[in-house]
Image (cartoon, one colour):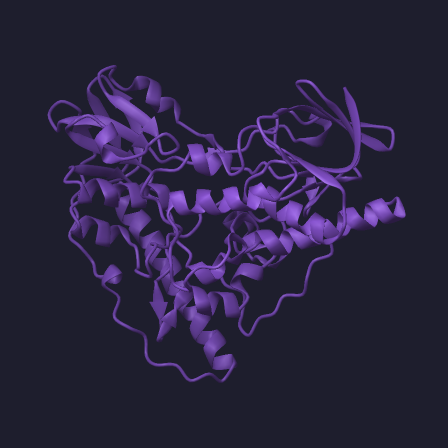
Length: 420
């Protein structure tokens, strides 16, 4: 069966639902194709106790909520389901191929061929779990799972747990395991962190006002920030640090570098990882202090932050599974995106989209929901609506004028210097 439509959105996660809302506002006839259900990744790849690390006022696309609430997995899924209930979604309809043919795009599913002039790919870049090759070397008796399939402590066998990776997932899961009375070994990684509060206000409030989340890739003095893990911010308005986790009982280790038989080997880089996180927090504070000064604002002195307090650490570089009763491993080692269904000419040698900002290098196709797509906030609930508006304008102009409109960047409002 062949069907023609003005625009197709692929993916009904937060970015796809934001895109659909923007297209409705602009009167664009469209359909959203979703491989599962609305919010599929949130339904299937989030643990039960997860909470957003940004407060409610930053997540307005999810609907009304108390200003300082931190939504749980179940609450996010419920809100995405409500958004999806009023969108033109075809659920359980995975896309097989997307190709350009003449002046149109052909999008094929298992039983339908869509012909359209505009495509918005909103499947996200972080929904394919990445597990290192070291996982194959673990003893067969050791249970292991990725953060995407972890749900709660009781799914793991009795005994100690090795958590690999100390970014957002590794931190929250380690905290939960400790609260459940489990012995936790954490193989750390270099991740920046942001203090929860600075000079009388939540740090994220300062960061939003000084333009941190509106920063564009071209503004960055060091573009390695784009591929770095998101800085660590604990939900609930409290600071997170490896030192704080150690005080809670976690046994901190360097990076996991090898597994041989019953033995695990770790790098001697724990001190460096802590220093990296602390240096990032110090830069955040310095940038905000400069922004406050430039704006002539009055703010109280810097608060004492327990997350900054040092701890004595003497991490081992080797552990044995049996000797230390480590019965399970949780891989908090990140995600990638799957774009294998796109025409190969649309992706690079890593299988990632070739694009300029939100626009593909071929007319009539745009992306949403990727980190640093247009600005720093592009990959989270704060940024989805603004990015969707830009893409929605581009789609509407293309359909109206029969030509492609570039994704013009909105102006950056800032009262300080560029943050790290």
